[in-house]
Picture 1 (cartoon, rainbow, N blue to C red):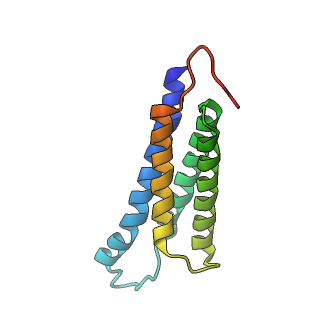
Picture 2 (picture 1 turned 30 degrees about the vertical axis):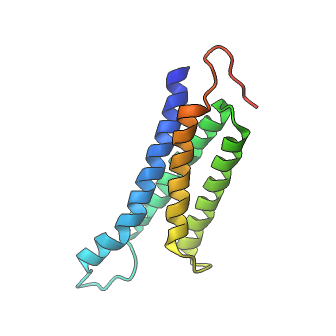
Length: 132
């Protein structure tokens, strides 16, 4: 039981951290590559798919973590920040609004921090787990 609880928060923290690294690395990778021949203005589709991959992993990690946490604040915070991350990634794909990338970084850091906090301080006991 304890192993499964730890895994969802560990996976969530890892996914959020990798998402942050992915977001931070994107401009540098494509500036260094410079797209000299094709002059591409944006990232290739396969690179953008990583956004949705991390979003999907985060969804399942949050789903599992919120079932085993003692803190309602953590539950609502995880889902709220995931929803914000979802909205920002969808917005980035369709370019509905111009939003500073720093919000995306802040949300990814916050999600990772919430998972780590939940992993350390908000876990249910093995024998008696509160699912509220």
